[in-house]
Image 1 (cartoon, helix red, strand yellow):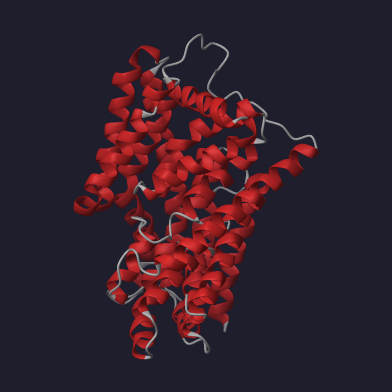
Image 2: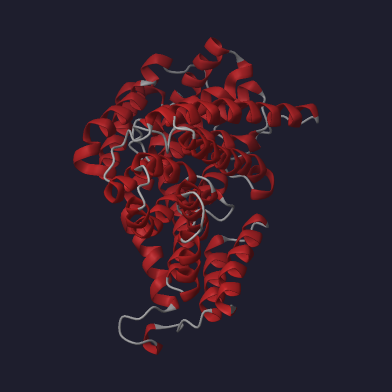
Length: 438
């Protein structure tokens, strides 16, 4: 019981500290230490048996492992976003979009841009880096409150695209290994759920923005924003879209052979394409590279800090007990599977982590019961993209703080509504549709 109190208490404390703006490089290890102490984990490897779990090793393994896996993708993604910004390509594309769909649909343009890149195989983190400059320009021109930018970025990336049938994102591929399904498992229900999440979520986003503007909120510029007054000319908007097409195309071509490593090539290609197409429009390309590199380091450090917390949580006896409870929930296997994956994703701050931990336990048991593997695949995939977006989640912190420069207090209410509540409703809808035989 004490260990369980420590695990959930540490998680709640991390959420509170995150919402209050504490630096995650301090908050995450501090709360992970609390979890370790309450669960009786040795603090240092010298105090533990050989190979046994301990606070320092497990925290730093999670921390450094994430950096080792993702640093180059964060770096190239951040630099790509900065060169699109510095060259004026982001402003050019955004103005062209506004001229075609109107100022009132600026948020929709951001959502759709993220959706296209995500469904094309570009990593969620990279999508946020890449689309943010365009989103900032769109919200500025439409005079929309900038605190809704993170919500628009995340909604287009982590809801109706990330977990849908055919998506190349890992959240749609992990179940294949355990269930013997395909990326298109349950596609009929997936289409229905995706359409619901897209329509309902966008309606909710528009409603929240309209309510804020009715109270007098508008776009507020900052000193750190790229200068727009000094721009006398911008590059051709259609040519400025080519780097985005390059990123999407290369990631799609090499996704099956290189996996996530294809993104490094794709983003490098996008940077090169931006330079060669718009080189005469750059204001300070070396500064753009430097700013991108610095932003990547800050973003990945914040995210890795939270992953380290998850590494400690997963090593505790209370986590094993919680997994046993979640995976043993009575009733419909689809409900049990969805809830188990969602809760574990929330505890670890990772949608893929929730699936990777729960499915090895759930899959054999449920398949022996005769559960439709395609229904289980789609249900757990959708549910994994819900509680992973709690305030302390790595993607949440990166998008809100490191990329958009917002505070959790301002940005998270809309962010959480679209990335936690909407996917949870989508998971419920999926269970209902599968249960009635669709």
